[in-house]
Amino acid sequence: MVHHQHLEIASKCGSGQLGKKRFLVLQSEGVIDEEIKGHLASPNTHGYMFIGHGWKEAIINSYSHLGDDMSGVGPDRYSSHGIAFLYLKACYSAYKVPIIRKHYRYNAWESNVATRGRFVGYEGTVSTLTEVFQWATAKGKNDYPFSVGK
Image 1: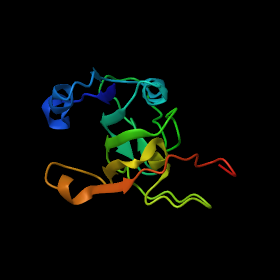
Image 2: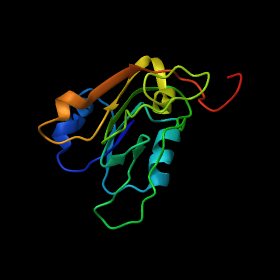
Image 3: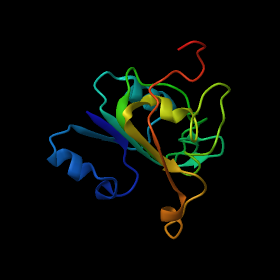
Image 4: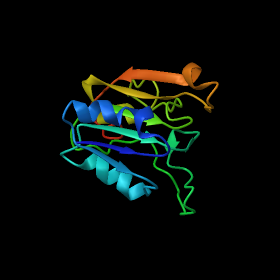
């Protein structure tokens, strides 16, 4: 099962391609923070794509066009297992947030992804003209960023 938040155009995020590969693709518009955490924690989630707003410190879901009060979701381990991919199409989703004794290329979002998988996000603010220059990608870590000894 592949979860992603649909913001504008489903074809832009590849849901058609994933559906053709026989994945169940669920689309949600206007998700709240707890739904994002729940989608990532599901044992049925193979990969996750978020398309929406983000802010510095790699916080996603920082604004809702529906008017809901959003505090956003910060980078941490939410998945119950290492998922195959995590695409965060939100400004600053690949913002560098160092963690002591952890070697993330960008931030703890990488911890949700299997070591054979990929984390993809944006390093800065994004517009239609600058999107290709802000892409950032890293191999998954499949670890626990704030746990000692794991």
